[in-house]
Image (cartoon, rainbow, N blue to C red; front, side, top):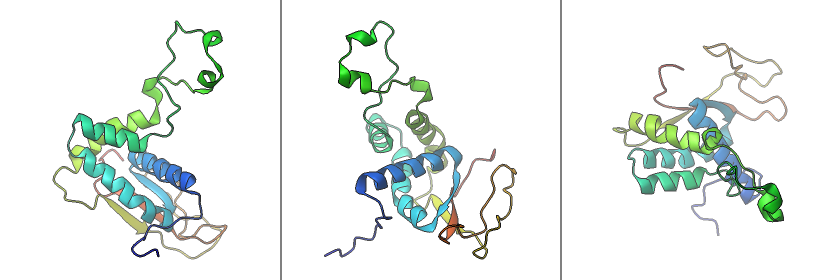
Length: 177
């Protein structure tokens, strides 16, 4: 029986659903405001809010917990040391993707979470995100332009399947956005 199992499956396999939650959370941390469907926003909200709660206090254990939950792939490693030749590596080691540490999305977002977003919500006891439904009728026309005129906000329903579109954002956004 599925009593009290309120999280939706979103029509995806468990690994795909986990990747979707992580990617939407990364986008929310980076942009602090994203446009997505209502079902996805409701699924991401508890995951993102638990991470923000962990980021309110900065210690090594919490940093490791958050970085483990936001890690995109365990196959990523820091940049390959220059003294290792690719000829000396076996097949499994060649498949590992090496990426400079400063460019990794999950490391940048963990730093932003603990240095910017966590302190911003230090005195707030919860409810760090808000879901705003976009108004409009199901139609092919796009809606209004955002304040910065760089993002087109849909008219309320997605064109292909008429899914309800929402703005999913942090309650207290930075003043630069």
